Image (cartoon, rainbow, N blue to C red; front, side):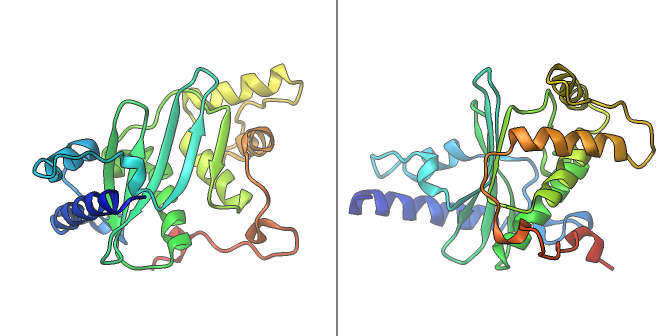
Length: 225
């Protein structure tokens, strides 16, 4: 990145700092704060650089990717993070058509914040952050979180009772690997399907947090009084 690009990046980050101060907290979204509606990041970039005569790709702001879902038809959905100079993390998403700022989180353990973000995203199917998660299950999944059991929890909550559940079961039946219909209220049958689907879909080496013999951390949502 050139000196000029660093200057443009800093100008955009300063603008995002100002926007983040306007976010509001909600009891059900701790530790996140959210804007009234998702913010179009490309518009913020253009407005903040209007006097600079330059441009900046939103990807230049990315600090890490939390979750990436890829579809054979070519569509991609990304959840990713911008780290501001103040230490605040901005959670964004990109769906191929637009990039939006969804929420902010103050200084914290990045892994814990990312896990909590995915929990809230899944339990509300995006509604907590002003978006809607719908459609079939992705063909490939990439995540900075290496805990497979946690990711299974996330996808069970995100997909159960939706078109994505049926697409997973259809795919498994085509592969001769089952594809059970849900028969229990706790979703245990569908969980087995998600576990099998993720074996094929997850593109990620096992991390230390998911290796056999390691105790799996409790879900953060379960630790709130």
